[in-house]
Length: 407
Image (tube, rainbow, N blue to C red; front, side, top):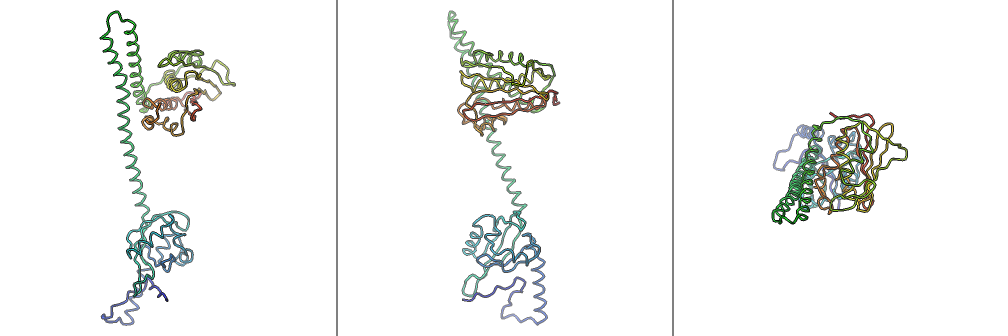
């Protein structure tokens, strides 16, 4: 069967038989008018075969697709499905819908322009059929909708971000409530037990008092971390420089934590912990740094507390001091369970434990490392964290020789 040739888009529509025919001059005028409409239309117009070849297109469509002329475009685009659409099968979906409905409005797709850039388009098209109802070709319009699609995607991303933030807020509130209520319940519970003891039960009373003291200290640490993070995040933390010899400074801090420098000590729940101070091979003692002692103490406290809490009782936690002309490195090295890539990323985020509540050993608010990062930035340095599962963690605090305290 011979398929009739499509009617060019710039040809005026046939007139019903009952209508009087145009005079020759009128037909010429009408043809010119439709040709101008086709050539000058600001949106793309096209005719294609069913199998995906362009039969005709106007200059606006050629420009939209990145071609200098209509002729260039018709010569280059010989397979619409393979050359134009970005997503495989998109042309097939277009044809399927056309066969089912005979007309499409707002068919949205990503297409690849001549220079390789990707844009969004919306096609409105109808199927032209012969007298027997057999499809001959498609004709329709194309409109670029890239700006609208990008705005929709941005709005969708913003809504998802807001939803995640709202969920994180709810989890955070639940976590903070837990962190505050747990030691408070311990304090109240052991207080009730003390009230029920006889006067001669001194040993039990002392045990309960120690539990109350421990719970009170945990509660105080939680509140201090919240306050510290708030002050550091707002830039309200005060700073004062002093000349510090690092090894005795760190040794005093270890004793305060109960870590037991070069020996065993008690650290929460009766677990034996040991901390060793050492120097890099190229570093000779004494190592001295002009720095804010309070901020440095706070940062090292967080690093050592984490290392002691997450390393096995029999393993030594190492604090390694290194000094160069440009600055000082303080490494806290533990042999604990380490962290996965996901946990490592979350650890650097404020309230990261909210993100990883499923982690069985994850405790606290997840503010320790973000606090250290903020302090390092205030002191003109930075914090690096390396870790992998079953291989421990190394936290390296870099501080410059010349202090650069942020206001």
